[in-house]
Length: 169
Length: 337
Image 1: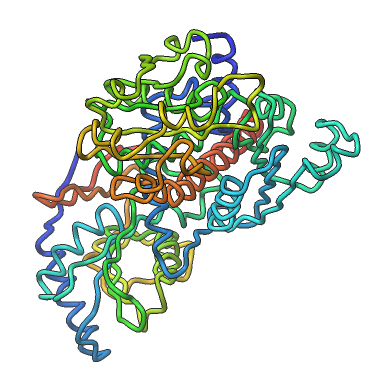
Image 2: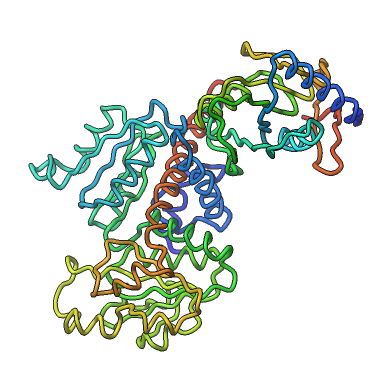
């Protein structure tokens, strides 16, 4: 059993929320960074919607994961690519789903190895709660609570769609 | 597969096929070799950042155990370990306790007492890293940095990374390995890697005195005439003439060797126009290779050095990750009923 969420509605909400945060903080030329894989797809769409001049960067956080000592290295790691100077810039970090917050912690550690940004804004399409670290998104498409048998999956990139799967273990 | 290959295979992989030691390319399949190359690609990107470090081996201790001296290999292993955030201890054993009579086993026990997590081993005896991997405490990863005439797997893999960067793929490639194949652990590992990754032809070009017996059984063709052997080549790998390992009269003279098997501009012109020139270093200018070729536009010798750091980061992090995952899995098996 799979239920579809309305992706356009969620993207509209992210776009509106981001415009509001950028406006409040008086940021006019942010850089966008997506976390592989889903976050990269979303960053591409949001970057176009916000008419950002610089193409978004891509992060693969495999080298920064805190579970290396339990499961080893992800064999499908691909190079990160931040084709711009992040020093002193404002960054919008994009991911599809936030839960424990560990992915975001790893991503922020990686971003700081490229230089010191002025600020980071976090945007996630779905917030599933269940946080294990004090990390909260600034902008969320939708917050929801899942039953233990349910999983959220972003599929894409074209067409991009988001599903809630039942019994997906 | 030989019995020896089988035991290497079991020893260097975890039950679910992850790397936990890196001793030889024997028994590693195309998928795993490709994973190593892909992981190294990501580490190349790390080397281009402001902060060229990732936290994977933070808090781990890597011991460079060099029973045979080396500058390039040791320093690139050291840099690789440091870029993975490990603490690094360099031991040049040829000038230390073993020369005072300590046995290999005793040296190892002492190093293990320092809570080391990984040994990078170079030894003049073939099979020494394998011996150490069999006898070391479980959980410690062993990386072969060159053993006798047997293998030099990280050198072969950095060569594969360099070839893939310049040629995109191994399909259809004709690759020659030229010179002192007899004394070369690098050549053995290269032939194995090129065959596993799907190169069309691996050709060795050398005088009969510098070829091992049954060299074809390694998976290559043999050419004694370099002018003929250079034809249609996509890649030419020159080997260093290992003067320090020469016993007896294997060569008439260095000058004669250069005339017949040295890579000059004239000989290089016989290969494909986009043929790349490789050499594991250190190069003997005017012995295996003309300076104009070594420094020329087709030379990728310095790319090899840069790629060496990335390959060593990949192998070290994969082996350490395999050891840690293995330990974790075994602990949870004990806890669960």
